[in-house]
Length: 265
Image 1 (cartoon, rainbow, N blue to C red):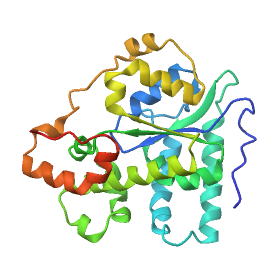
Image 2 (image 1 turned 90 degrees about the horizontal axis):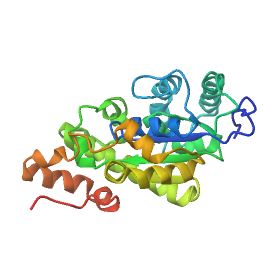
Image 3 (image 1 turned 180 degrees about the vertical axis):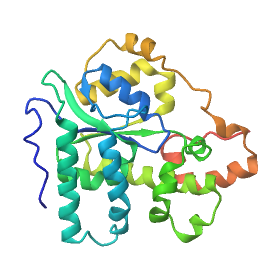
């Protein structure tokens, strides 16, 4: 497979380092953390620290990629996908300064294209942010479900309520990413839970910095960014037990795997 040309990046600066996860899982604060550690994540960003050039790219290509997951991309589409990525990368890296410790981007939906991105960047590092799928099911941020649910969920799942569809998407996407990361990218993949970042920020930030090769005063970063549990953490607890039991049925494998096995007594 043809690959994008990385000679436009500063050779001594490692990258790309990519931050992805389900929408609303806490990637915004992680992006701010890595910037404090010296990582370049772009200058064309929105309030959530998403790299907007990559957001447009993902809007165009995720569903095309998902539609081909049981076969393969047509050569013409694969070529176009690579060419578009080359253009996005060129714009993204134009302001890269040689003093950066690393470069990459944060766009949560990069998670959908992890195998393709790995084919283009064999040296990439992927930081996978996970948040309790029951919280995600009741998030107001259902953009990933709205934009890509039809391409990832089956017909039965698509007839379910929004929380159930959201849980199904969360489960399938995060299980696939965990499998791919642990199996194909064992030294280039790190998964952190948003809840652990909220409750043990010093430890998790130190882990992130070691993974990406960043540096900074961790205690100062925690204080400056005011890292701690948001009011929405654990919002699933306010739902009816009958509904929660159904949510757990839909996402049981992922909830167990990622340590979200606590239930209401």
